[in-house]
Amino acid sequence: MTTFSDELVERLVSASSVMALTGAGISAESGVPTFRDPGGLWDKFKPEELANVDAFLENPVLVQTWYGHRRRIIEEVAPNPGHLALAELESLLPEVSVITQNVDGLHQEAGSTNVAELHGNLRRAYCVDCETPAGEDALSPEAENVAMCRECGGLIRPDVVWFGEMLPMDQVRRAENAVQKADVCLSIGTSAIVYPAAGIPQQARANGAYVAEINVEPSAIADQIDETIIGKAGEVLPAIVEAVRTKQSATTE
Image: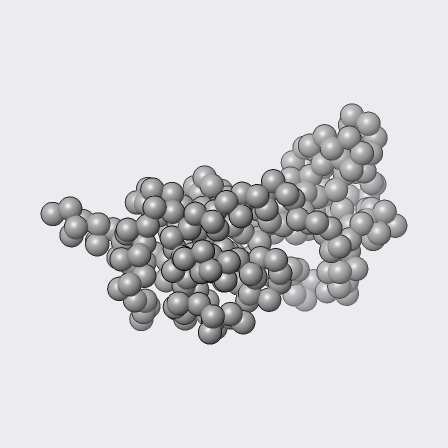
């Protein structure tokens, strides 16, 4: 049985701005591997060996096909009830922002309209030289030749943040704005280990937000926030949304 406090529901109902930070846990419920498919061809490669600029320049075909493999996986999955509940929350509250560490685009597919992607989006690719966006078929898991830009002939790379790279500043600014305004912060499916994203809930709480985490087990910051809800996002979030709707209806009657 999903258990969350009345205070969380009341805070959500009265909030002017709500911010949700999401990690791999919410997408895992849709069948998205946390980084790679277990038991498959790519098990012999460590993520850090392929997700960096040096590896890309040394063997672009290998890196492009690996990301083509990952992209195919996310194209075959769908948003789960957790994604859909966050999107539905937009119709109930004045403002809902999503800050995600995931690169699968499932929040947008579910209908969320205000999403900051801290680590990029695997569904996009672009030229490293002229930055022209590449077509949806630019990265393929079966490619035998290097994918090149049709405009300038430069290498095509996935639009994701690699090890050693800075986060996209436009997305960081969107996230910072959401954190500053948030009356409630929901930390969902994240272990709160990878910074700077891991520090977002504490930043929100320092700004006065009520912070609740939804996870299958307590995160590294569980003792530093207001409420921890143990459970799957796909079960907890729909229940919270229903409680918010019920509370709003009772208030207007």
